[in-house]
Image (cartoon, rainbow, N blue to C red; front, side, top):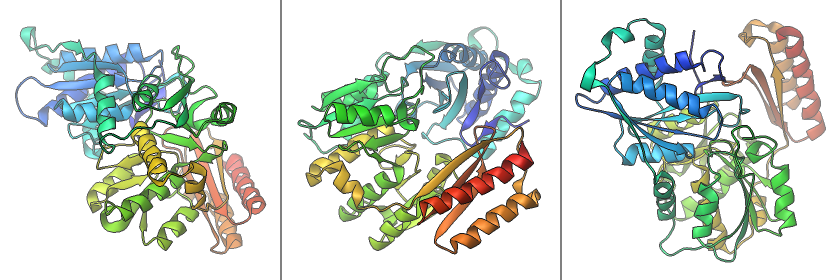
Length: 450
């Protein structure tokens, strides 16, 4: 049985694989595999988490498993996923672990790994951890006595991460005179982003920053921006910033309360980087989900767009492979490899604020340069996943939609990598048409897969 999906291990808490017993074995297996990669001596794994109630339980189980195999653990508590990636590198840890289910409900949780370089683990390393969890031999190789590891807490993790983010801006730059509403989704960035932007001189209104272990992502954050949009208009703010539960993504709202998504963020920043001579190979890496409007906008600016499978892990792999430094996803995972090794919501936010200040321009004007095609996204819950290519009725429905669009749009149907759902994306020039085509495909999927 596979443990790893497109973004680590994820599931409902106290159901396999997110049980204390399995998580203990995951910690043991990770320690065994990751310590072997770095030779002899006492090694260290960094563990951070978001604000879910179950984080305490999973943190304890992972720590026990890792220490039982002779590795030490550094605990940093609630911190955005990109902060864990940053600290893993700077503290010279053997690996970093994030306990989070990102945008999922609070009763889910997950485990994401970073290598010592701050990148997500290659498939072959994940596979070896998975194999060891399913085997029954780990208990026979555990050390005794002084060979057991220990854990300690790092108290200034948030401060270190904030200082690093500030260092990505030009020396002396402040955001004085800019009013910002921040929606932290009651998640990992509930302290980080408000604290960061106040230190940079902005006037900050912080909402959904009172986590209680159960309210993470509930009608707030980057998946539910309606509250942020209202707050931006209510407070007459210049910009709104919304994170997901672990803050590796960001969605923005302009001063008129209109959403600015990851495609628009990538488009704005790519053009600026090219002007500054910083966009490597004049290329942006994104996924098959990104809007055709982004591709056409970048093409006019002399910038190439490369698409990968859905998942920021695949975006980063392509970036490293090709020597590119800007990529991301429509959902708001934006990766600046010059600054961090994974999607980084706070860094993305400050870079767009920097652009607004440099151009002395409202976010609405910057975003309006990128004309996105109408796009419909539908999620169909299924009882179990099947290879859709083996269901001719679904293939026929997709083919029919593509023929109707006649090259003036796209159809993408794929299984979710994190949930028991089939995701349908259609984009084209006519909103009503693509809505009908999406509903037609979704109906066939419901008939054949539920």
